[in-house]
Length: 116
Length: 116
Image (cartoon, rainbow over all chains, first blue to last red; front, side, top):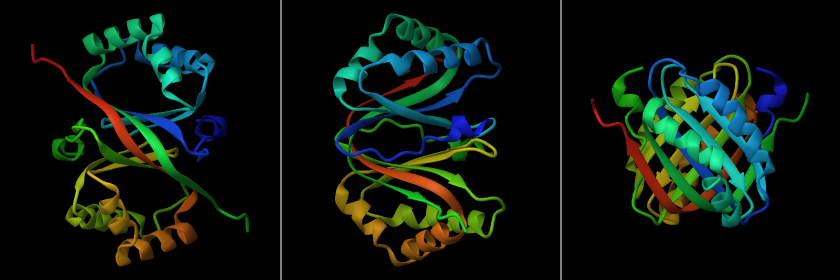
């Protein structure tokens, strides 16, 4: 995994929105990786998209948090044609279960180690 | 990993709060695992604590999302003596960087695969 992919971990200036997507996948890939990469590119074009972080415990939970400036961006992404098709396919093939939480960030802060 | 540990993935009835903690660790454990387990137990006693989910990509990002019914619970946990000491130790030893986002959940939903 390149440094670039784990770089975000950013705290933005509130208010903004966090979309928390927590999932447990079915076994196998079934095209998941390719579609996930495509979605990761598409979402960057959504107005107000700030960035996203993902983590996945092998064989366990995956959590993706996408940050948007406002609800308009989230709604655009929610109704994006290609994204909708991917979600439908995901419910049929990729996910055992998931939860989605759309939340307005009221406080945030970041920490970065001081190089020694 | 036992089924019990990955079980949550729950969508609660809004409004409630999500505390998103995204981190990149330093190398090695340095007592992290033991303290993390202890914190995972302590937080269960905080009034209004609803549950938490964690995922960590090996060698990459870790994301923990803790859910609370209200800000009072988050404040109690933030100022909990043993938790404060752990956070201080963490900034000195465990984390390269992290971000924390406290957000009020406005919408949520869950999906569970229908057994076939």
